[in-house]
Structures are given as C-alpha cells and as structure tokens.
Length: 123
Image 1 (tube, rainbow, N blue to C red):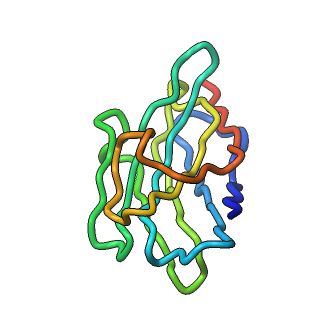
Image 2: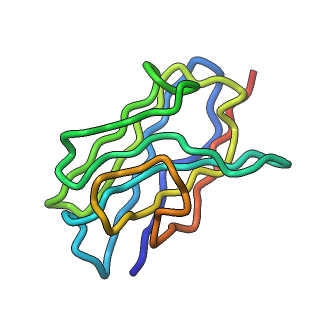
C-alpha cells in the first residue's frame, strides 16, 4: 500500500493550497480517508476525514469553514482544499487510510499512512 501526498508549499496568510493523496495497493473505495498534521514540537493532530463514499465528512474545529476534504474514487485520490490559510496551519500534512471505511478523527484507527507534505504559511 502506498499513499503519496503532494501539493504542499509556501503560501502567504490568506492564501490557498490544495493537497492531494494518491492511493495504490488497496481498494480505495472501501477505505475511509483522513488528513492529519504535525507542527514542529507538537503532537500530530486531526484535520479532516471522509467516509468511503464521500457522503460524510468531519473537520477539526480549527479548520472548519476553511478546509474541505473530498475524494475521487475513480482516481483513487483524496483532496484537502485549504483556504484562508493562517500561519498556525504551518505543519507537515499526512493522509491516512482507515479500513473500516467510516472515517474517524482517531489516528490509532488508521491502517496506512502517507509520507507527508510540508505546508508553510507566512505572515
């Protein structure tokens, strides 16, 4: 199984980025998918999750209204559209796959993890 995250970069506060996570080696449409992030010196934290069909999503309060998670099961890809970015969004962002398919905010429930992509928001 491989989860390849991409789309990170350097952006000014108020800007936007779209992260992608391409999955291979698993039946993507059966898995719930999540995005997590880890800032320097901090623990990894939940950002957003989506269930196998894409019909249910859930967000951390810190990103609600600014970030949107979506998926394209035909392309085996999950996305994270990030708008109105703030310096506190700076972190390495990781995608993860949950075999139960429902999507969850608990990182211990995820079975596979990608390598991470760096997002840096300047003030």
